Length: 273
Image (cartoon, rainbow, N blue to C red; front, top):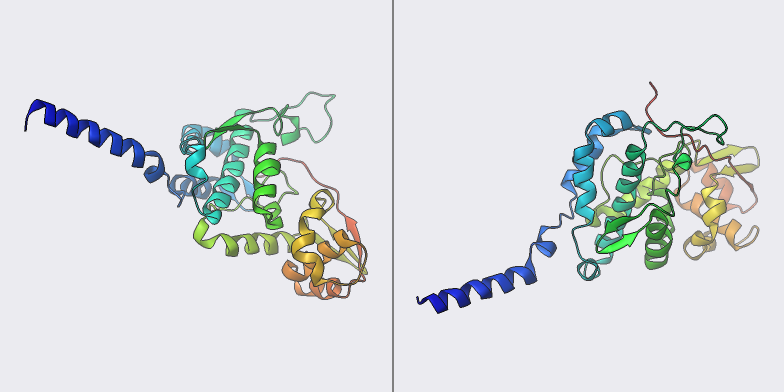
């Protein structure tokens, strides 16, 4: 083969490599590195942030994987792949935000609780990250991508805000092939916890997540309880019918229980030492 022919072959190989890899081929939709990280620090219902900080290089590498795909590539993925990707990105970036400021020690005159993600200035609106070719905040991921793009209220049971009253941080990543079942599990687990739902006589006391985002549940769950309050109230009862413990579900199905919202505990979901 002549030198010119070899040069043309090398150029053709370079063009083919740039078109097919490493970006598209290299992204791991099994999230193996993230799974290993979660298994090492999640102590349900809490997270070992001290251990996470001690191994922060691994956390930084995991966060870096979410920056790998381009925006155009991410938009070619299947719906379940995209949704799992953005849920995992949100949760991993929340871990990084905590570790970057850990231990959180607020000033004496700071609002309580002092060991809270809320003590990190701009944690949801100002801190910016590169994910799939976009520069985004945590609020961007939740309110501009996950909620409007996928229209699945169960996402509120999957996102973890590093606080005691949040749904638990799952010990495994969300993955496309098991996403539907994993979201159902997250919803049932949260509504089985005292932070998600409490039954008190004729009253169902639910997480303030339903107060803040109750409208997201209307399309999927309000029809499950045709009577009882406005559409948002019926949607909350419907979600309890679908995912709540049996006793609460039976009460919710009647449409008669009163709904009250639990106070939200923003204390860091750190392991107790």
